[in-house]
Image (cartoon, rainbow, N blue to C red; front, side, top):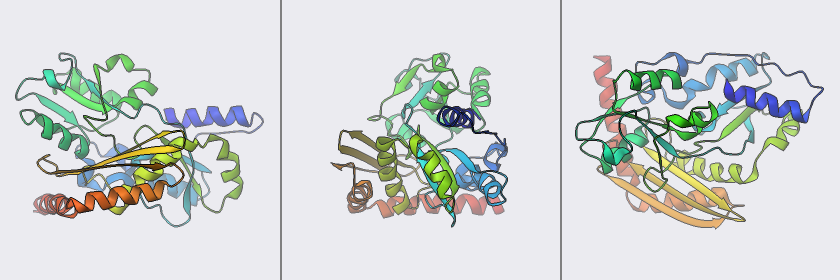
Length: 303
């Protein structure tokens, strides 16, 4: 809702005579809180209902956290604008400890992300990682009740909701490479709405759009979803982009990494270069482990 209000305010500045209304909706991703996203359908759970509202003519556009948007959109929809990125880093949140390094053996860390799980497990095998779902207030309340020694959240969400004081430490990209699109917001529309595309163009941030296009190109090649511990992070400086990526098994025992630099005007090409480097490190075998674990979990759930 904060993101919708933010976009509404930006559009009001651009078009002061336009009447802008927010159609609040609760998605399946908001409703299912007792299971990890990787077990119940992944990223699409946060956008499907909004796309139905647009298809039915109830809404003109939808505002998403880009990292929640599937790599392939349904036919007839497109991302019309990518807003300037907020802080893309992960944030360490704890009432008792200053950082991941300070946590004692056996301490419980909460996260909703297989990517974070893999990276934490690789660096801190002595920690216990438990799933953490719910909106920001719910997650912080679980921490405050002592269910977790620490939780890992997106810094962008805490900053946007006026809670930067809850961040005990920022986790650098070197320690925890961000997810594709982390910290960025996207506006989705019906592809046939050329009028909307033109109106939203001023909100598109060129550098952010280039970076996340490269990141999503990597994720798309590997079938990126919540079921895959995958990171991709592009940084644009002038006309140049640095793109880093990582694919891992959920337990962090096998990790492939890649980094390239090149023209920011060719984000898809940079993404493909990273894909080639990861593939040369047998990323397919790593992903096969992820899929095998997912199938085993689904089989157990069916029983």
